[in-house]
Length: 177
Image 1 (cartoon, rainbow, N blue to C red):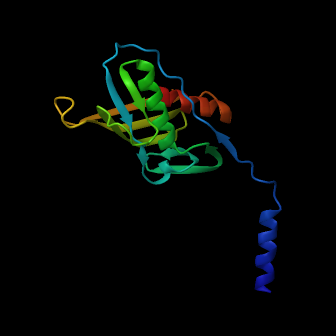
Image 2: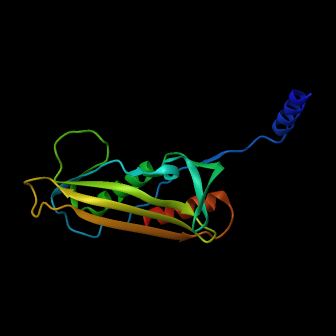
Image 3: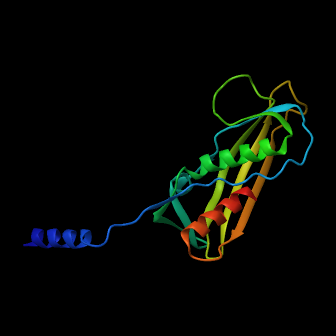
């Protein structure tokens, strides 16, 4: 009898409408070039992220201590991959570097390497928020001083309505900020 109830409950759970999963791609527009070429090359290493920030699900911060996955909304690529692409595009757009590589391929050693981490990539009730940390590492013997430099960047864009496309656009804006 108990097994029959379990089967009935499972069938009832499956009888509802199918779950709609929507996927969003982030392609922020880089800022226009603002500086003169330095003549240096830079490699943007693939960004990393810990825990939930390394997944495809959209994350929502419901309180200072709670981060919730939205199983119905997903990014087309993981936030670290989106951050890597956005940072590389922004560096290319500055026109400051002779070459910007984010392919992960190992070729000629660059003058600089940028190693990054996604610290926040989430929605709150009011905004889409992105926070990135990075270390700029000069190639040994090429640039002086050869001391790594720590960097931080954050972006925030208001969420104006509950429409999923508008929410994805706000995250795109936060990533480009």
